Image (cartoon, rainbow, N blue to C red; front, side, top):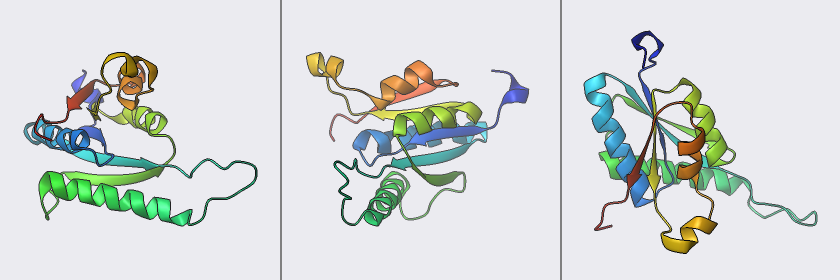
Length: 147
């Protein structure tokens, strides 16, 4: 990668899963020696509406996503957020928003919760979409074996 084109930014997809917590930790361990910034991105969406019915408490979805983002950061780094870590909460499909965030990132890091075997072939996957379409290198991190 051209040094002049480098933004010094590593984007991490966060969904509260053990794999995304591990992704945050890996991203920070890569960012520190590079002097890069880590941007933790959590995405949320309004629920699908069918037949004109609106789901109750639609405003709570954003609050819940913010809580998951904050809890994930605390699980990864403890109560004090490292100076090179920031967070963003975005509304929309995770795969699209993370791919868009890859446009000005040096690396995209996502967790893989995994649905192995035949089910993995049938289910859509944010990590697979990011690997296929991101505009920067992508690191896919597995959850630790013990949880």
